[in-house]
Amino acid sequence: MRVISANIYLLKVGTLQPVVIELITDEGVTGLGEVAVSYGIGAAGAAAMTKELARAMVLGRDPFRIEEIWSEMYDHSFWAKGGGPIVFAAISAIEQALWDIKGKALGVPVYELLGGKIRDDVPLYANGWSYHCETPDDLARAAGRPLRDGYKALKCFRLPFPMVAGASGTCPGVRSTNLLPLVQSKK
Image 1: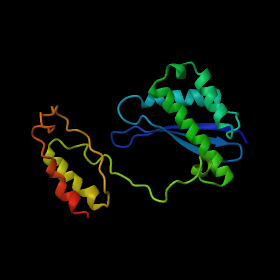
Image 2: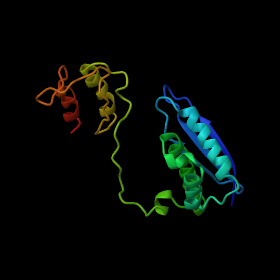
Image 3: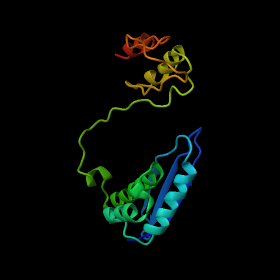
């Protein structure tokens, strides 16, 4: 089996720009990987880096030789030795796609290839629910939906204005009890 093609998708989902690579083998097995830089600026650069790495170091290769390909991308791409989020996001996405191909070809979930399952359930948290909140009261109102949807944890971002912690460890103008009734009601 050999990797014969790579498609890079630069997507637009709201304000996010996820980048996905699809590797295709000569046996028709495909693998997907996400270039994890969808926030802010950098998606086009990450897509270009991913395309260059795939073209130079993945096409024509045996997708089962994941460690060999990863080492080559790291050791011989010049920029990887200096680090940085764009090159490492590209390498990571290609590695994900290679593991996806291997798992599909062997008929097993990737977690089995990586040592097996360690739990039957994975707790989830809601993310992205607070992006448009500007006040503590906005946060309290917005938290209702993911909690009603069954989430037991919420990822919170600070409000868009600077808050300085007071001597007591609280932030002026923020009442931490705003979310408490909503959380308690889910018990």
